[in-house]
Image (cartoon, rainbow, N blue to C red; front, side, top):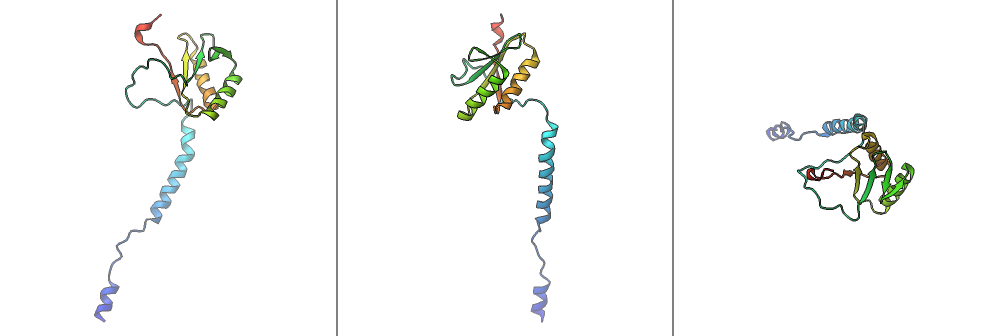
Length: 139
């Protein structure tokens, strides 16, 4: 009888984690729903470390030029917004890792550069780089 009591009084030392998993999944769903609502605007991937100037862009990269009067150019050819989205989307379907860069004129309207970034995002571009000139090359 004494042996039976010892087995009966043994405590369970396991933790029931099912309620914690349920809470975690509910929080995950809440954050997944609210995250897109909190961030508005154009997504730009910023570098994580100090960047060095590059000598020349990758020859395989796409360079979209925004002129001072708001016109768009791709491969030095004037292009409409519809053509820009269509051509960039076609290129991104074939080569999704292609870097896309925007070269905006110093006197271009900021809204036109942001519009170009938005058009590229709608064409399926994950991240966009901005081209600038070094400080010593002011014209």
